[in-house]
Image 1 (spheres, one colour):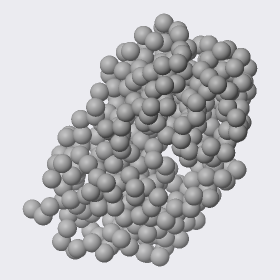
Image 2 (image 1 turned 180 degrees about the vertical axis):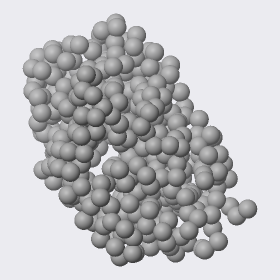
Image 3 (image 1 turned 60 degrees about the horizontal axis):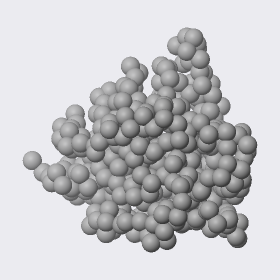
Length: 414
């Protein structure tokens, strides 16, 4: 039987890249040929591993788009930003040797192109890897539609209607013109509803989060392969920088604030963080590669760092205040660090709700953020015994993901 060639396709920030890299490395360790396709700016992360990496175009100007972090309009921004890169995938796959056994392991937003690849290359299999629970639509509880929780008493029929209305208003008008134009060029039938179509494309669906974080729902696509969080640290040997170690030794455990590495619109977020910490006498570490978002002069009990691996930083923190990205959420769970999630868009609202349900923290919607509310929420998590106990339980469950079953499953996709 020919060697399996797994082509891993991802988009987005480093938080999206790292779980796919962890899976790609496990597949290589299992003896498969692996190629990664992703945003070209991530090459410095991938190339040291020796994985074959093929950069796709990425316009970083999207990080300044005013709607990028909007709860409802953000999806359109992300979709439009990813299309030039995804349009390159079918031609790249078509150029592979005809005799290769190929499996595409892709980010959900690459599924339309994965379906085109399969139409061009009979026998190709498609696996979709879902980073967060909200990537998989469901009518079952707990259910959020963007920032809006759906009450448990709402019947399933009404929930299906809500999903259709959401798709017709916010998703289909944005995505279907591109999708159907590409399909028409290959003589394929048009798609009527994007979400319904995407759920039917994969030959295998994979969750990159554990059952205890989000139990399998009856209406999730089948066949389904569950895994744990495939956490990946690009610098596993790195320890705390001397500057950070000195800051930690100089006082009480600080609170660390990060809006995500891709957020260049967090000036107000950091202003609220500084004010809330000053009012409550808390020390703080501000994590952002975009120094211009911070005041020129920071108060003495505050340290700025462009990047510190959360693996080494979080065990020393009183709490983590963050945007609710799934990678950051998982790192905090692993470290047993209390969380205050300030969600803005995308999967962040659902992740925040799961943090609250686990008892490991609380949340405050970014639309309601001010220094007073932020300070009150910090009081709810910093130094609270019940939160600390819940964090310890979550840390005990956040074990390294066993990816061997996934590697075996990809070989036998039907």
